[in-house]
Image (cartoon, rainbow, N blue to C red):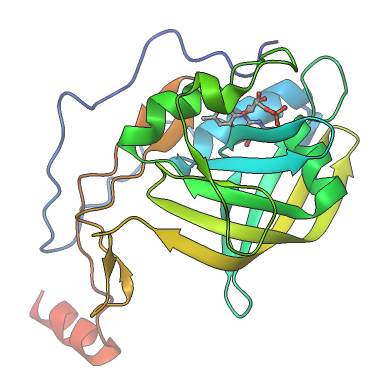
Length: 247
Ligand SMILES: Cc1cc2nc3c(=O)[nH]c(=O)nc-3n(C[C@H](O)[C@H](O)[C@H](O)COP(=O)(O)O)c2cc1C
């Protein structure tokens, strides 16, 4: 089963965005249908993948550059990816093998060998180039060039970084876990961060969500934008009690 195939009918709602209101509580509908219990461990790996990757969405996309003395620079996208903590700042990436062949992906081999990589977050402007980087080019073809991306020197690691990316994290491998012969999970410590001018809000000490537009992966070829926001503040216990009492 081709696990990366996308659903036949698109459920994309990009053209008909819904506005969420920031005020008041959402009404929790009482489920009317039956709840299906899925014994996920008995499913074929490809079906486990389809269920997990279509459920845990949207996922941010790490466009990773790595370097090998033999083959030079490599760039590839990974959506099994997230931030795991700070002090030290840690990212995690899930690396599958090359489907069908059992061989490790170039990114996995390079990180294993050199212990260094750069994670770039993918925004709307970088989406098409990221997609080109996922093509299974023959080894002699440079995907970075094909994608029209520019590599510039990193500050603390050997792999270069992509100049067009909104954010880049220079990383050193902390650990690589082999979950099974086809799956590795890499933990990387962030040594240095690069942010496109205008995205960093020095007063708030964060990346401005109104200026930063990363895309998220839904399933297969389906992506989402992140331009619609809504706010929910966690109330103090006393305020919550008072609100309940008022009805
Ligand atoms: C948006 C997107 C997300 C992807 N996420 C993953 C992932 O999390 N893990 C993985 O092993 N492959 C993932 N892939 C597939 C790899 O990018 C693809 O196999 C790539 O060719 C690997 O390149 P490499 O051999 O140069 O490392 C993803 C592809 C796309 C387009």
